Length: 373
Ligand SMILES: NC(=O)c1ccc[n+]([C@@H]2O[C@H](COP(=O)([O-])OP(=O)(O)OC[C@H]3O[C@@H](n4cnc5c(N)ncnc54)[C@H](O)[C@@H]3O)[C@@H](O)[C@H]2O)c1
Image (cartoon, rainbow, N blue to C red; front, side):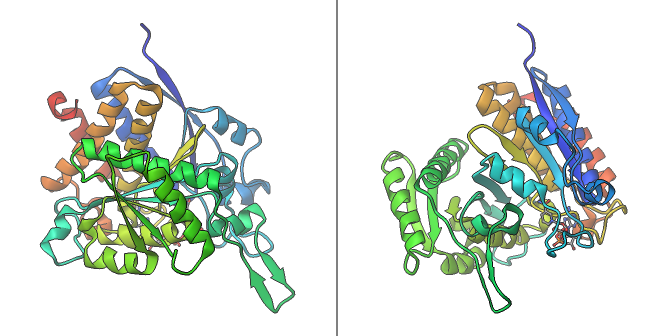
């Protein structure tokens, strides 16, 4: 039987997006070489603010079609604050891809690693391991300017619309329950918390109603509820008490940054954006113009996004070697922190992007196979 291969569309984008993409692919390739059983072919596509400045387009001709045809898309970061459209908004083709590919499930894991910054003094914070599931195609971002939303009434008023549809919300909640079930197999509690504002908004009461309907199909997964303001409090007061948190787009945008801050910073914030037909993987951070070109970026968010991509491909193709490769990367990050072989500059360490990447490539290459399969 021939080795299965997968096409990956790669958009490095702007600023540190380029460096962290190179880092992520180097570590993914190390995991592939260590474990075997699959092959990845990369196709690089041009898009972003620098590309826009050069050409007047935010994405290369044919690139969106090529991304659509790939098994997965990997993206570094897009946007540079000094390069904007005439209306003042930034160059954001990735938001359009999210919309056109209907990437509704935004998966943002938040995990405390040993010797990585632990922002909360309570020792239970060392156990922090949760996932924020951010709906990523509607909610308040239904109105985002990149997809032509929002309304300006002269110079006196502005309105944005928050949209919750049954079709997307059912899929989102099902995704949350399946994710909690999968995490339960790996030792997590197996619980989904519905984060909303159902006490005030009809849209949010509808979101919760659909949550309850779908929960009935997953009796093995525990459920609870939190209003978004109380959830912000709880993410600081007792984040270790949560497993999978499912929420509307804007709430997820804000709370996932807060949660990322609890375990170090944006350099730890991995992200998967998954739809029924397509999926895009990227660090949750931006192009970080303040540190670009200086080898200072922490590549771990991108590297862990690479592990999410392998895990997604494993599920999609029902091909366990890919899941083993994903686990190898996660284990290498854990081990690297535990042995203090990963010391990113983002946390005051002495290792730049290239040094962290090299350390992880070496760790993945030396990972005992028994540890990872
Ligand atoms: N998905 C995306 O591509 C995406 C996401 C957010 C922002 N952006 C764009 O990126 C540009 C900069 O935005 P911003 O400054 O608000 O957010 P940012 O995430 O780029 O940077 C915020 C802060 O975090 C730091 N930081 C981010 N990633 C880091 C890493 N890997 N290692 C170390 N430090 C890191 C930066 O140095 C900066 O101080 C803007 O043009 C914005 O539109 C893109």
